[in-house]
Length: 165
Image 1 (tube, rainbow, N blue to C red):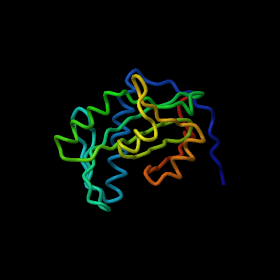
Image 2: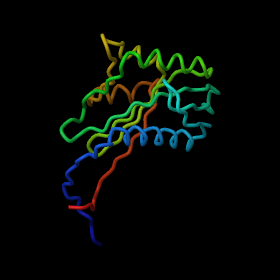
Image 3: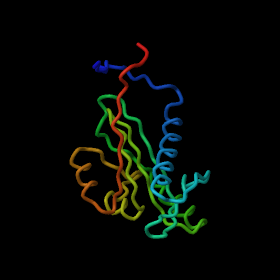
Image 4: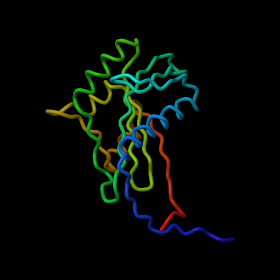
């Protein structure tokens, strides 16, 4: 049986990678929610990206998706959330009658991490600083998120076993 050996593939992001990362993250969260019975939709509105009805609680969730694609050597860096995002999500959720949530998607190394939590839980964990709140990605914080019932989490382990040289 032949085994595929993954060679070191150098990552060089395209000029539109940040925009593509954001679109991918929104679609990934939308897919995952739908897969598990959430009625959900992508919305184009300041403050929220998705609206989803939680089938377990009936809660209508307005979700702001934040994403980052980390270069090699940058794993474990926190994701910053500008303070004005909290006002924007509140305004959007008020307009649509939903509860504010954040989905945080971080692609680093060979793992894509996705966390979903309420805005209130996020602010308890990481109160805003002068300009931003930060979602930490160190190993110790990943362990804390796993132990926190208020943080939902899924991840993908990925590889690129064959690619252009």
